[in-house]
Length: 154
Image (cartoon, rainbow, N blue to C red; front, side, top):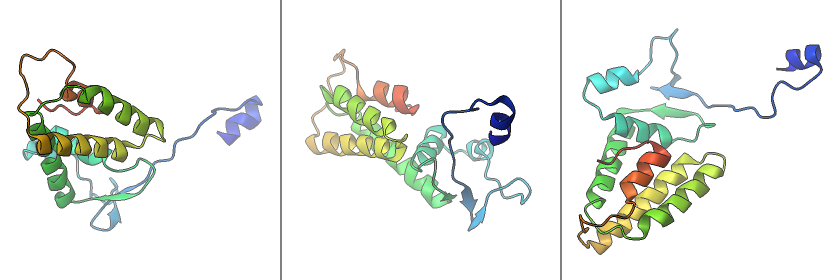
């Protein structure tokens, strides 16, 4: 970008995004090292694409992190707890959750905090344990989580 600015005398970009490295077994994943854990391989071995997405979103984009099978198992359990909470009453929850997720994502794309907001909702819903009315036509939490985070709960 600096080279282009010196040639054109105008800035190439107003913003730059720096991303962290993903490691595996204490070493940065890279094609040259042959230590890539490919999403296609994870899905082929039966892992949920939504659990994989949850795992990826649970790490700040700028920070380095390490992939582990344990972290994927934790993401799978988290996703299952959200799905279980869908059985309970959600009236008024979707609007509040939308605000919390937007707020987190607006703050330097803080996806881990957005996931924590869904965790908090699931905990509240499970504690209340009021069965959901299947005839309720309001926007439900599953629609919000899918639209804002790309994670399907159904």
